[in-house]
Amino acid sequence: MIITKKVLRNVSLTAHPLGCRQYVLDQIDWVRQHALQANNSLYAPVEKKLFPKRVLVLGGSTGYGLSSRIVSAFGGGADTLNVSFEREPSETKTATPGWYNTTAFEAEARKAGLKAESVFGDAFSNETKALTSELIKKTLGQVDLVIYSLASPLRTDPATGITYRSVLKPLGEPFTALSVDMESPLVKKATIEPAEGTQTEETVKVMGGEDWTLWIDYLLAENLLASNAMTVSYSYIGPKITYPVYREGTIGAAKEHLEQSANAITEKLAPLGGKAYVSVNKALVTRASAVIPVVPLYMALLYQVMKEKGLHEGCTEQIYRLFTDRLYADKQIETDSKGRIRLDDWEMKQDVQAEVERRWALQTEGEELKQGDLDGVRLEYEQIHGFGFPSIDYTLDVDPRVI
Image 1 (tube, rainbow, N blue to C red):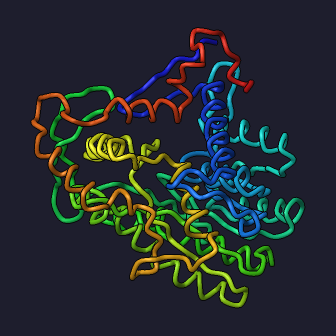
Image 2 (cartoon, one colour):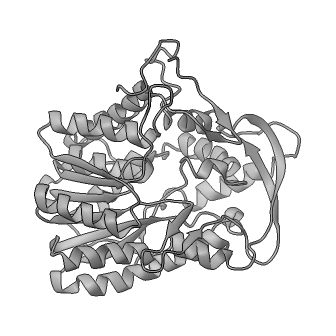
């Protein structure tokens, strides 16, 4: 079939297998190049002796999770295991981007002589935890690093069977601000109604630290965490412009819970000499962030400013810097006053934010976006679904089951 890009309300409904493969290969190539060289002042070469050799990535098929897997494997030579919920392809329907990404990654990892396996299932369930446990015992023995990078609209509590749904809403009152759609350069106003009833509590149940804690408890009980094992989960803070819809909204409440959970998990890991961290990362295009009102406009301005300053990073550059400059550098891990790793340090530089705010003030409802990189944001969104690569002929007939 000829696979074309189909977008409904900013959500991509299709993925291209050859484009997803190229997306993964490009990231692998970047990591391989930077792992060896010492002439890039922004990115240090890899200290392989410090890197983890057995890595479990919960949510390792897209975004920061996928990049964590790529950096672990092709930067440090780690064997990796991924857990993610994917839709497989059929003769007439494409798979999720994560399915194609995982297939491409694991093929390349095995070519490099690395172990690479996946469990496709509901990562919140006890059944998936049990399957993962058995696979770790069979292939890795134990793990040195657990990355928690799950993002989901819902979660069924394995203890009660109750299903909770997450929402991205402000608290207390409606929030109105300027925004843009992925398909139009025109600036518009967007209003988000506040959370109601139990929506905040439900969002915390889905996106907070409860499941992260359950995973660590399970792995500890099964003796699957090695000495000095670390675990890292990803969070976001962002600028004051986005606070009402993000940090001070329902998702912000969940992220606060996630960050607080790190302290409790660290106590659980203390007998092993291990530790839990939350890494606060920069704003990047993901399948989820593209549909958040206000955020695409902020990202378009931020991308342009950071590109002009030579500081723009994608997921892979961010995670490479997390590993080489923070987690596995020959120095004490730097954290803020709340114990968080601040990988958003370049985004939150005073001069970067001041310039973003200046450009935000230039925007007018009904007019085209000014001094922003909406094209770059769009291209990044296309490429995480396998589209927008010049090397791919998208007019060719492709079997969606083959990569």
